[in-house]
Amino acid sequence: MLFLPAAALCCLCSALVAMAAQLIQDDLTLTRRVDGDVSFSCRGTEQCNSDWVYWYQKKDTETFTRILRIERNSGNIYDEYNHPQKEDFSAVYNQSVCVLKIQRVKLLHSATYYCSCWKSGYYMFGSGTKLFVTDEQVVKPVVSVYPAASRAHLEGRSSLLCVASAMFPPLVRFSWKRRRQDQVEQLPAEGEQLELTESGCTATILSLDRDALDTYKYRCTVQHEGGTVEGQTEQAAVQTTSRSITTTSSAPPTSIVTQPEAAAVQTTSRSITTTSSAPPTSIVTQPEAAAGETTNISNTTSSKLPKSIVAQRQAVSFQSQCRVKLLCVLYTVLIVKSLVYCCGLSLLRIL
Image 1 (cartoon, rainbow, N blue to C red):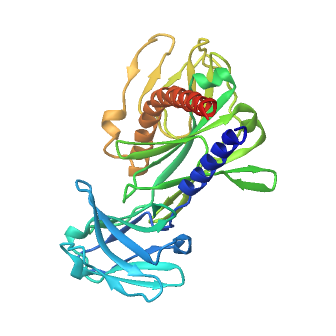
Image 2: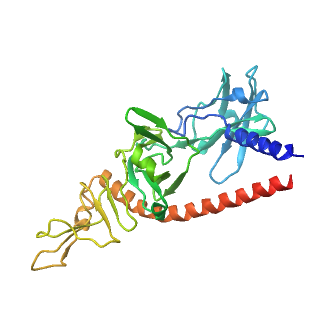
Image 3: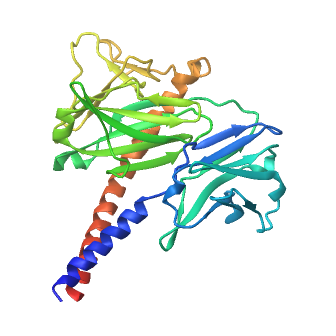
């Protein structure tokens, strides 16, 4: 009877390891023109217990549709699933790599394609590759790294915000690295990370201990169809206090307050000061004789600014939205973790 809780924990660990395993689809997106050709690769099929590898098509407004299956040993293809475009697809299997091919791409092929196989009582899937059928050119993302301010700073925690914007296709994959002296370490993807997508931008928030920020330098890497892009700002330790936050980034601020006779800007204990080398959207001047006069230059120059500056301004606005969502998600995660912990204790007591 005493061995039952231990057996239950072993089964739970085995289930978690099985859930972590998946097939590998290296391409997050592929962009093709009409009448072009495209190939979707799938690795890791040596993990499969069955002889079959399946390919599925998933359109945005539809459910998964099975296209075909291929036998790993012989390479024979079976397409008995009555897919509407089954004649457009072919597949090959070679050395644990399964490839789905389309010889002539059509607009109706726009979808996400998944490979799958049977493994010990469940179907194991790849992460999926989305096909965009368009004449639009692939554009690399603009990547920026910011310290994300939240109430977690008061509890010995800090957060870093990595924003990717102005890219096409709009899908990206984030990863984090940290460096101390000459040692570089890749952070696991299953760590405390949160991804948000809104207004043409995609962001990830990395939650860390404040001590870790004092020890390591962090760098955000963004994988995109156009290539891998690293954050332009390597974020070092973020100095914060309980009531004031000072940040430095390459993104443009929303406003700059200048006082010609003062050497420094006086702020209250609850203010946030942002310093940047990029052009501001508006300038507020306070000279001796005309304090409080505002000169707004954003409306007259916005049409002449480069696209990179406009994208950075959108990223700043998106950053403030992410801060609010971060608070909500962090508290939600804490509540879910507490519920899972209570359920686990109850299960152990029952067993």
